[in-house]
Image 1 (cartoon, each protein chain N blue to C red):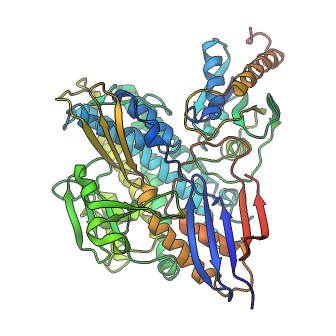
Image 2 (cartoon, rainbow over the protein chains, first blue to last red; image 1 turned 135 degrees about the vertical axis):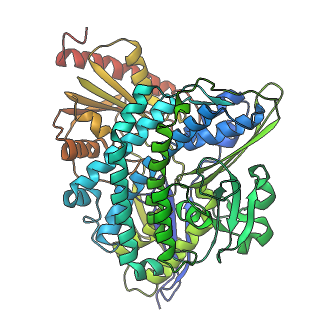
Image 3 (spheres, chains in turn brown, purple; image 1 turned 180 degrees about the vertical axis):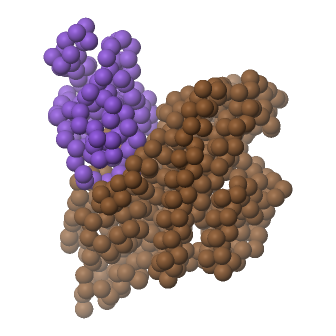
Amino acid sequence: MSEPRLIEISPVTRVEGHGKVTIHLDAEGQVDEARLHIVEFRGFERFIQGRLLWEVPVIVQRLCGICPVSHHLAAAKAMDAIVGVDELPPTAEKMRRLMHYGQVMQSHVLHFFHLASPDLLFGFGAPAERRNIFEVLREKPELGRRAILMRKFGQDIIEATAGKKIHGTGAVPGGINRNLPIETRDAFLAVIDDMAAWANDALALARDYTVENRDAVQRFAAFPSHYLSLVRPGDGALDLYDGNLRARGSDGSDIFDQLDCTRYHEVLLEDVRAWSYMKFPYIRSLGPEAGWYRVGPLARMMTASVIDTPRAEAARQELLASNDGQTQHAILANHWARMIEVVHCIEKIRDLLHDPNLQGTDLVAKGERRQSGIGVIEAPRGNLIHHYEVDENDQVTYCNLIVSTTHNNEGMNRAVKDVAVRALSGQPEITEGMLNEVEVAIRAYDPCLSCATHALGQMPLQVELIGPDGAVLDCRTKDP
Amino acid sequence: MMLLIAYGNPGRGDDGLGPEFARRLSESGRQGIKIVTDFQLKPEHAVAIATASSVVFVDASLTAPPPFAFDPLEPEERGEVNSHRIAPVTVLALARLHFGATCPAYLLAISGTCFEHLHDGLSPEAQANLAKAEAFFHTWRETQHPVLAQ
């Protein structure tokens, strides 16, 4: 009989940030437990205390280098509430929406083309040297070129609306500090047809993969869960920038619907587990065991009643039909959902660019000062909640953030366990392809693990095999 | 025109060495350099590299010997591409592969010591290393472009 073993994968490669996976095998070589440990930086909520309210939308961008716009806008929405503004001037809301659609599309493009495509095109079990973005680019050079230009398009929209690509200052409490000049608008319109065509091609690629590999997709880390997102007031349409909260059960029924975001703490609680720095949110009425849920692109496809842009809605209907109209729980369908959102964002960007309100000059509204504010947005990775309280000196006294990756914490852990049991249990040896399957499951959630620092020399890949007495039986390290 | 891409998160202490280098260079009024500042390297920086005569990446480093290291780079078609982590050699490879870029490239890696705590400002060691890196860069540039460096 062999001894129980512990396999560590630290950090996870091709995931944004720093994480560690431990897979515990029992004496028979069966997977006993699998966990995703996230070294999440939780000091920000304290760091922000004492800052002036108008500084917050700028400072929070330092939370993360890859989705600063999401934090910028969520914080700005919370500060809108604090300065007493419930309705922005049309120019301000549309400029913010333009910024957000640019952010979401460029984030999704990077994930799909550069992070996920090697797995999807070559398979999880392919040799490591094959599962490389440059292998994809050599086979499909146009794909890589388009990905870069689509990213640049999104980044340029962010720069035009936020003022800068980093530490943007566009959104201010109560509005926006700029409009969109005609010449900038025309530059975006000149390439929007290319963006739309390339997005449709990418959508087809994601759809074809999911349909052609239906059995594998349905088997891979697929398990039922509840879903949560913002939806548009009234018709429940997909809305990435604003709306009310909707939670749908694994069977597609509503758990709660059209709940005002300011009441999030009435329906969501966060569980704490000793082995993880990151909390485990759940729906209060269902409890921690049954109430966990997922957020993100696939969740949004499952919660939305409709998408208000035609090509994206047609694609969503196709996604729903691919599972006979049942709730889709296959995590790899996230890639398809992500590309539907890219199509949606480009459709929305095109509509906004034709809207003369973007050249308006009424940029900021004012209202009666309040003590607290809650801003909620659908970030690329899912629902994002910012909650602040300020004192009479305009200084922040309280901050609570629930980021998308935290919402998905339980789902990612279950995905790791699901894949580990199937791929690793009872196997005579642990191959790199098997370990990669675990990482693929995590990557499908597109988690951002909040490293927000990247200095040269950091983040090697370390794999440790540890025996029951704590001794390291094996260790492999891959340089960054 | 020379392209200088400086990157890092100023909210993470010495990780802000790159942006601070760029800020000081920009304020010094040096001509003939296009400066790009960002949180981190991104694939789309390949687009700017495609039209540059040369490119210098400036980043904080945990492994460079103090005060800094300055080395030429060649494109390498290896490594991963994600938005937190992409190596300069990988960006160069993307620029070559997609846009035909062949310009000479260098990495200025400035040694830092304090990255873990969420705070603004450089450590005393990083400030000293930054000053030496700046002095070196200006001298080096004079040898590259003696007129523009005035």
